[in-house]
Image (cartoon, rainbow, N blue to C red; front, side, top):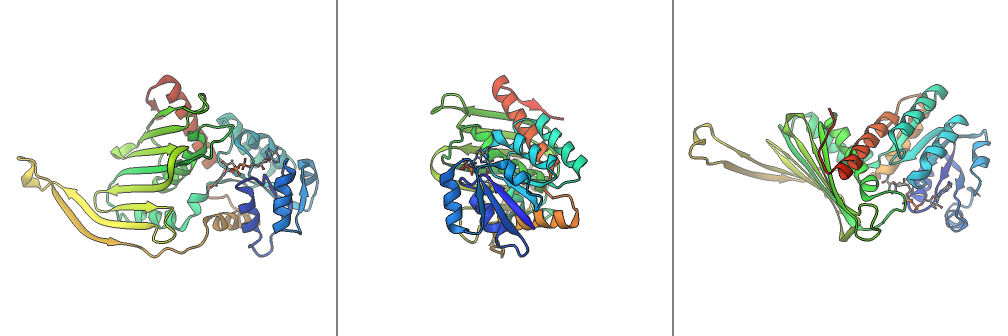
Length: 332
Ligand SMILES: NC(=O)c1ccc[n+]([C@@H]2O[C@H](COP(=O)([O-])OP(=O)(O)OC[C@H]3O[C@@H](n4cnc5c(N)ncnc54)[C@H](O)[C@@H]3O)[C@@H](O)[C@H]2O)c1
């Protein structure tokens, strides 16, 4: 299967490298507006045809699928053209700049009977999959909270704020783990450098059953932290994504209030073992791309499809509304 990768800046070369590992898949084209970035990829993958001309890729009938890793503001136009040219498309997060655009792409993909997948890489990570299995087995009991810190120095994007850049990771993980939409959302954020787009932000989401999610995202942190805590009535976890191995720790801890101790109030704290589950070291992006190829071959709907992409865009739009109105947005 011939593939083209469009956008070869920071993320695109990772797509080229991982597609090249899949038997039967060939990255035929690398496309970018920057000659410098094209040359870098050509050096590592000499057989790839490098072009600045997207139409050249679209008009090659031997190209079945296109992966798009360009800045967000270009996604809608490039994906639309690719689908209309009869190509299957994998587009990086966030799918589009508006939910109207996302709906249009979903509709074109349906008409053209083409796979439209969104690159929510964390959903394909072995750690997130392990957490999902534990939730399905009711291992944590009632879920109390999801608390994520996703901060670093940069990379400040030209066409989005920090929420649109980094929150799609947590919003897609939450959508996958919880399988339920939040009932309300509130965003807080500030801009210090560009004075326009928010660079430091906090999101608060509420779910039915009282579960809450807090997402702390920043481009202005001196250190890179990628930590998710999930607390439940039976067990709690810490997922530290910057750990090279042992990313996940499961704490057999909880707090309860014995029936007869309500008055006077005296909660009981239980502290058991800490478990570090075995998790395969497979790169999430490789699993994501294998899934994309499988969906094309088997005519299947991807796990992270256009509708999943739209759900995230709707939440991102709600964060914009919340920032402007300085209020909690009721979602359902
Ligand atoms: N899934 C993930 O974990 C993950 C990680 C990083 C980035 N991303 C996403 O990947 C996308 C790209 O991010 P990046 O950090 O690589 O950006 P980048 O700015 O480093 O690279 C973008 C590249 O696209 C090229 N480009 C711009 N417009 C183009 C066009 N019309 N045609 C062809 N090439 C064009 C630029 O020249 C540049 O080389 C974004 O949507 C980002 O959110 C996803």
